[in-house]
Length: 319
Image (tube, rainbow, N blue to C red; front, side):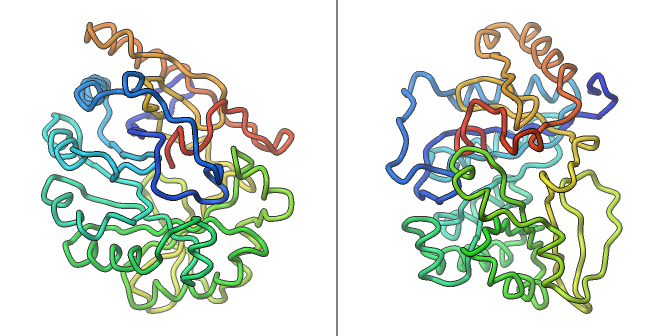
């Protein structure tokens, strides 16, 4: 379905939970969060109802996010049932990777096609500090496992913060030489906990690119958020996601479903549309999704005051 600006919105990002087994410094408060009540969170059956309704208006791509989606029991079966919905062609997952190595084979068999793994340092001590408890060895094992079972592409999401992990730019780029990975550098956004680091830690993609010589630009006819490059003779690719320095709103093809049953047509807008009350009537649910899609804002305004207008934190929306 097309929104009022002619964009084809066929991609739904589904946040299944606000809970996570890590506490990344730019995402989640160190002391954790006030957990939602169980009855406030969508059940998997309700999530599937919404995905079916989204498919009826032209949705074809689903991404499950969190918090951390792999902490939830039944996630493999949710992916399996999603894969059987007519019209859904692509199922992806965004994860911190801590639990992924042991689950990758079953997730692939259930219908998972692609995975994005957050990895902000290759150094064990620094990774542990950034994530407040993560083990980088588990993430590297998950990457290896995903590649071995045929999940493709495997994308590595790197949020760079000046003075924290920007000394590893070339190390991340070198990962793509011998492995068919998509390493994607993401500009830090002034959203939630990220506001604390933004003023001193923000790095534009241009700054990052200057540290990786001999990048070869790639043409990509698929809609997406990343500008793609590669190194000579490399098996993988390097991407740059530029929400701050170069907006990609004109080609945005997604809306977001939160774990409490609201639609966020734009990540950085305060606007949310509750659809939970329409779950008992499919026609009303389809109509509510159509209205949410059609009313998607033209663009975000992160550059206005360097602050997101979202009323939710990133862990409540999904990566």
